[in-house]
Image 1 (cartoon, one colour):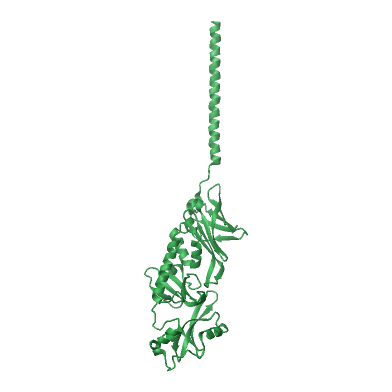
Image 2 (tube, one colour):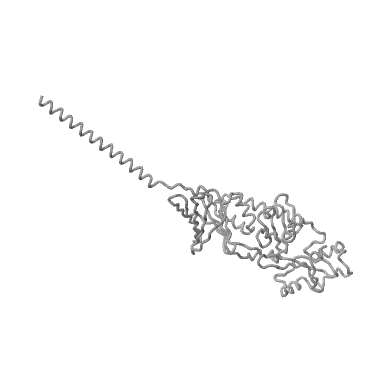
Length: 387
């Protein structure tokens, strides 16, 4: 009986020990699971709210105060930044006076709440830019962009995000052709997913239509696609409606001789050719090639009969007292800044007259024109000679 009680006591102790051990194991498991959950919370990445807003979008920023002139083709260029947001392929393309470059994404830093992100872009030439993107917590449609360079110069970018089509249109209406070709020479097309080749091919097609209708020689004049303020100051919608071209006259070596005093517009839809008119209500004047138009003196002499209604002299076959080169030298010393002969001659008022282009406004690069007589150096209005 006594031994039986002892055995029962031992069994009870064993059961109690097992219960205690089971309880302790359970508590440890609960603590372990709890700690694991807490640890998971600590290492979990924040929700990337800002990237959801900007992914597959573009940011296009031009620094209007930082502008220079391209000496080769005489057009204006502004410092330009184009951001293409595409997760790990996010990239930056920039245009500045001495170079054009595509900068690759080097680092990103996301805030804990997911409302702010810093992008670092680096170039092969050791250039570096940092873009801070901040999403407004109260108004998630409001995004603030701040750009900083290595010299700690800061730009607050107050531009809206663009879709792919909107960014392509922005490039078409603002980037000059030389800059577009430089852009195509980089890997920006692949990184940004922009159809830059189509923009270039459409420009080339419009140029061919221009040559076809003006009958000009490609060896004597090159039509530069130039939608910037050098030639045309209209808004973006106007430039999207038209391909804007300026004429660059070439010498016998194919180098730039001078630029035309007006621009051509080629309609983006039907490729109708117009001349741009900066004054008046009609900005586009339909182009009609005149029978007397020519850039060579010899051709004008052979067409003397076609311009006989402008002639009041029997000596209309004479070249004049001053040659084209002599008049150009006179113009260099004259009152008109950057004046030069761009076309002619045309026989008018008893003398051969050359068409002169001159700069009217140094800020906008607006140009005008007149004819100058090769005998008298008299100035005649363009409309007067061509009426």
